[in-house]
Image (cartoon, rainbow, N blue to C red; front, side):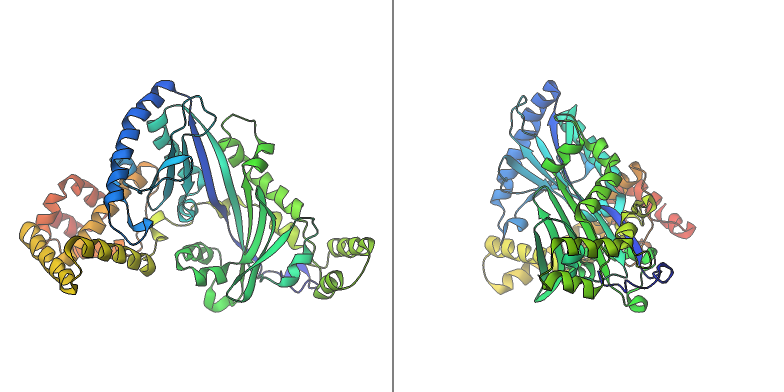
Length: 463
């Protein structure tokens, strides 16, 4: 990392840990309940096969746009999209905004898992790995009954303000791992050590975010912990360790559920990763000397030792070892971090366009005719405009998910910058126009009152 390594510790106040969290989590589940597994085979497999066939009938320009959406586990767990294809040993794939679930066809007594779940990064970031896993385990209990859950992959991340990636950082780590660099465009923005079961990465997180809009949610937590993009004008580097099954086996007992053990071991997993990569606060001159001159291994060891023993230097390796539990706490409520993504909306629109053209013909006028006819139909049957219907659907989705959030102890804070909350404002100011549609949503009426409307005047209108 680029620091002025010779300056005293007291001047390093601009170097701040902005976030520490589980960034990736993959867990496999294997049933140990023969009766529940038999029911799973009959009930869920039959329905998944049926809806997978339905997904195969959907027209779209790629696999992501071809799916069938339904509630396979009941309203409590929300809707999932089942795709037209499986993946390897997993015959069915279901996903929603938070999870990707893989369902295999292994026999009960097989060593192979029956379900694998991959947690979305924003979901882990928002509610934390423990609450996210608790929700999924409840779902799996409903499907498989008693089971063994094992972590297949876990990535731990620490975001540091006041550091910036430098190509000389390769020699600031004294280890025998193979390394590789990665780039955004032609610019090197990061480096990784190791492969497979153990990988340690450090990279310019701001450069990654600028290149991938969907990752902007991390900035909201950074701001709470002291980062200001305009004022600070400093980099943010992510340090990230990836553990997979073969490495995780060293810390748990084979064939026994290991999720709790891995979660409890997170501080030691982080510390062990830093021990493996051995950071030394070399100056640029020392780094260049080690990397470009023909010196003995003994001289190199002496240079590394001198750097680590020099207490006037910022010992960044020791700084990075800290694992602050408060930095893993819920920084904001779940829906505050999910921003409207134009790229995603465009993909969905293209899928809609493809399906529309294949269903009704290739005439450009067919699309506008379809929109007009749909608008007339909505007006006649529900008494609202197409735009109002769109906002109502957003609201309906919001209410359903709020039920889950309340159930699992997450009290949302309303962020009116998000599209869902703009829809709430629309409802509050247009209640008289939307009475008809609110009647259709009567099952959710109480939830609307409880979650959305705060002032007495609006409550009177609803009543």
